[in-house]
Length: 432
Ligand SMILES: Cc1ncc(COP(=O)(O)O)c(C=O)c1O
Picture 1: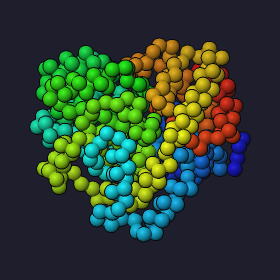
Picture 2: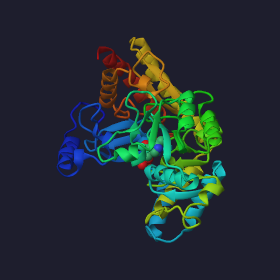
Picture 3: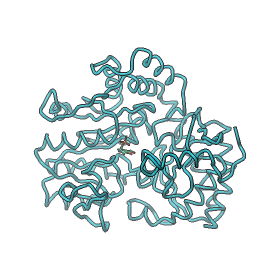
């Protein structure tokens, strides 16, 4: 194990070069490539508790936690044991299993959903929820919010061009204009814009992140989520709460544990899979009963409810009690405090945004309640902060527009590492 850091990462560099020849951009999900911060993405070989170990033998305090799932840290013995036991029984059966029933029961017990369907990724969950909402209402259009990410579903890869209420423009080649035109993109936290859009259009569903975490963390303003539910229902649309990121992370029931809201459908992912591919969508029985084979709206999956993923998810949720969430909240507050104190000491303009135990620091003096404001930050300052932290053994999300995630595995040693690193990182940000 090497604890003396440098910018060089020869083993990661070699792997990245090999990968880049055969995998587009060298990675299997774009943000991993470090494109927005520059430098060589670290190839990880092992995780243990709060630590990640890269191919060069360096270890990092992990504040990404696989983009949210790992609330108990890496390789928690109970999760590993559950997966090993499940694997020994066979990896997939293509038939229903007891584990699926148990995981579905756990989700229903913790949340307001009455029925739930297991899928493999958050993208599948939101895609299926939208199809179901369209099938249920017989309508086509969807309202989403600029800066909210719901996976790489065609209908949801549209963002406002100019920050005003506008018909969606595709964010990616390959998404047809016809698909994008069925998506209305509105500014986050702006109920008046939603009311206006609903008056002119026949909308199938409003979808929102329960608390936005994909433009950096931007919590809903008081009354925003409840207002969306009320407006949707007044206009005959369904309300979909995307809890893929917040679900079972910010409380034992997710965001709805902090702010109960009258949604029709919810989507989950990340934590509920314990680090394996599992996700879900669920909601009111009347709506869910329209899903095949109970109803006509088709949805399926060869590996849905996979026994290994269900075992990891169940083990992870079983461990997630009130003490877990108290520890996550406390650790998030400690780390956010360390970073903001250091930045304040160096006079770096910044803004701490929190949503439960998810947080991010925007390098701007202004408030951030929507995507336009998030884009005002000085990304150069974040990059300098990020690279300084990385070279001192702290792994932050490699983008200024992402949430920082903590785990209960973060102990005093890991906290000391963060505390030692933030001073230099703040100095680097001040110079940038
Ligand atoms: C709120 C939200 N919804 C959906 C998704 C898509 O999930 P997945 O990456 O598992 O497809 C994400 C992924 O980060 C997310 O944060």
